[in-house]
Image (cartoon, rainbow, N blue to C red; front, top):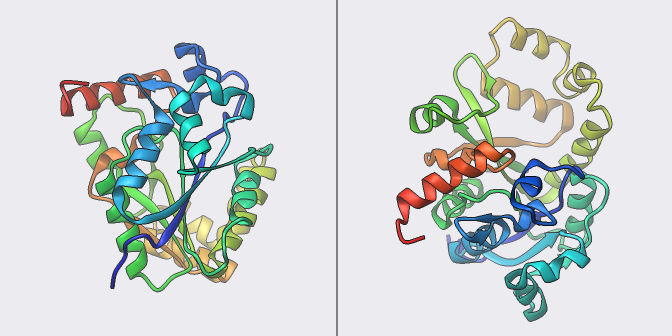
Length: 268
């Protein structure tokens, strides 16, 4: 099957807080335009998406319009029509919903974030090709936590430990058909963020939560529980490139990303 240009990409590119550590460290107005080895993070993401050959259009949600002149490379892409800009809303899930509403229902969507500074065309291709092969409504990109720690022992990554594997998220998701309804669940998750156990019980159910706490729950069973309770078939994609699990949330992440990029491309 020809997989070229199947997806519309949505890139969330607004700050979550007014005191983001990356903006404070770099002095930029929004984390998305913070330079990593001299190139704004969002430009690195857009370049990777474009070079993958799997994206037919790209929507970015944020940064705020008054910030765009501070990143001429981004503003030029918007003005030329290479990317479509939408104003961000008051939360990531609401911004995603707003972006999805602009996309034909029959078109599969890739959702990612502007702080994915180590995203590469190969990562995008692998994730989207695997996602296209699965008969499901949504996919989530993950990497093996042990692999991340072996490659980058100094990194501090959030890990979700299942019986069979510990995984880190990659800020890579696909949605097709009713898979888009997961964004509504995400909005509920944001509304319940101060009551996490209520949220987890709603999504997984009490017996699945108990199984997780006792160390019996596998990744496959967890996703099957999500599918049963939501009616949305979700499939994981384990990415072989552990760089996919490193985003730039903290100053330490920025320094790590620059170290990795400098080692791979000494001329940057």
